[in-house]
Image (cartoon, rainbow over all chains, first blue to last red; front, side, top):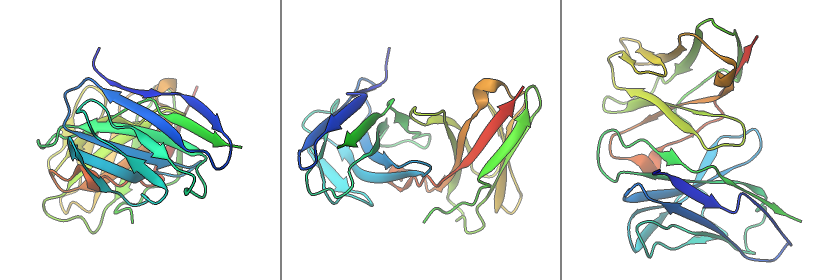
Length: 114
Length: 111
């Protein structure tokens, strides 16, 4: 089945540790995105990538880093510089071009920093 | 800034139509209206989108006013599984990085 896989689903880390969240898609989509969601809030864009080896900052990129070495993969690292990392993280993908262009989301990763 | 305004919550009786409103008074001529929903602790799911004509698919109908300043998502026969947060988003074509998810409307379908 085609889709987006995020792992791990739940993650606990101590303050000051870097954490990497995995996002893999087999939809042959060009573009991939990372969003953050806090309780009762909407989604905020962290980073996005339209093509391999290229990515752009979203609205809240500080304290996060990404890479896009393969079309299928877009991992997100939550660094120790992120002041409030506890949140629900969502990865999405879409066709780069095309009017439809709807986003397909993974099931999310819930990070708790102790 | 989200470009849309939605009521924070709504209730609907099971089997009845759920009508979810959205105001987008500053929408530009080339911006589309998109609807997504998010069931608790899952990723959002695409429902439908439109420019100015009414649209219908297997999940829902989208009614856009003639002046395009507001729209309504209609779930014709709501079920308990339709309980979710519904997001109304406007964006220009080819501009997926501008998909702004506000707080949405929390729809509760009651038996």
